[in-house]
Length: 237
Length: 364
Image (cartoon, rainbow over all chains, first blue to last red; front, side, top):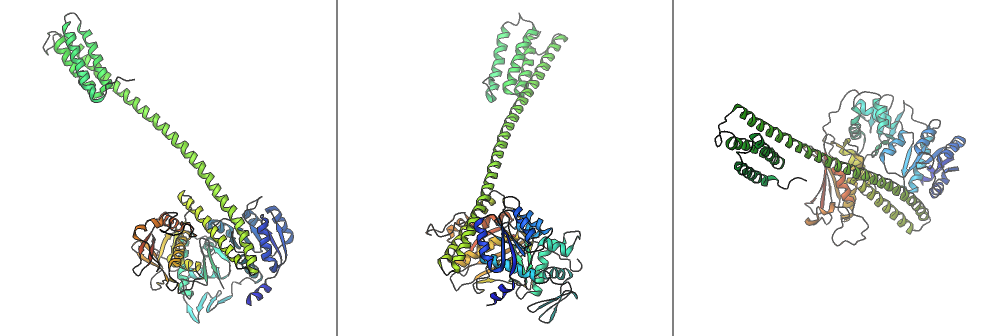
């Protein structure tokens, strides 16, 4: 099985779980034991921050509803010094909160009640992504029959050249540079339009739609640029 | 308290009084001074204006003026006036009566206005008190809902996690536990949302979105469904359809409609999902080949807790989906309607506001 190969490649040394609910902590630990040598647990934010600083874990699982401090504050605090993946558990099914989390530096989130299998898969994906070196700005990214030459600003599909507008190329470049990572609308605006005045960025979704028509096999079931409803977009390899 | 003669009754009463007064004083007119005659007439004028208003007051004043002139001013029984000083008395009477009438009715108007204001203030303060109480209750309800939501989700997560552990051990029943936990959490979420929508507490993000992006997100929700069962139409020959709507809530509406459609359609039949443009509207349609909806129940299906006639009380759904969907459509300035499908089954139509977009083609 291919999954077995993946399991082997994502073995981490230390994972930190910051969650106040004992049962969920146990479930999370059970789901992750195969993926790490050691799982460290904290029941509140302060303890979690202390353990994160002393263990320097490869990945942090963070519950938002901590008794002593807002989870998003823990997230920001860790991000002041650490770059390890942060996977958040949230009880609220509110897109605004997810956006705030991603903007605060979280890498992924799952909403309670979550499937423990899916959660474990997300954690492994994050570990894998952290392990693989980031995409250099002059790389040539290939996914299936699509080729993106970041340096030459050229895109080809099945050997044919694809014409993109400058905005479409920028959006594709930003997304493809961080494959597997959901970028919020805000993060894409900032990366593509910078501090440009005006409200051109409100058409982001229209540009994405036009971009998909040029690079996706079937634009109604997109596989390369995936919509994360209410949150943003993600490039899948 | 005021005198009990009001409105239309005031006129005959005070005119009669005037006649009686004139008759009485006419009998003794040789013995009283004309300055004394004026006083009782003045009283009648005041009485009239206080109960019958300004018009009666002025009418009585003019009548009294004429009566005094005719009966009580020398020469008697003529309208002519003997001495210049008598003119002074007469005109002074008229002026006094007019001014008194004016002042009295104005004072009455002001009193009435003051009373009205006082009543208004009282009502307003009651309304304000009521609103304050409502706000407090609403806040409490929100807190309660948020905490119920959180408190239910945490144990549901544990139940799901344990069920998955057990299922991994090979017990098929654990899968059912997990499914039921999902259903419960879905119901809790729907109940919370319905109450939030009703309270106007559901935040909306009306933004420029495309129909294609939305249909793609709907398809992604049903990735496990074979494409032969769910067909999303493509119109690649036309420019992308753009509208102003809340992506997440519109996705919920369509997901709900497709879910229903898949449930009621027979196994071989496809559910068709399409987006077109009609004037200033984006029109999404979901067609199924199910049994359809009896004409008499077409509007009822959008009511909360609706169940089809004859369905068992525990059909497994709370009947909130369509009610929430219609509410969500209307909150966005759209509509959600049902029509029979020409080929059998139902067509649900979601209309949302369209947007005309001119994209800059060159630079950023």
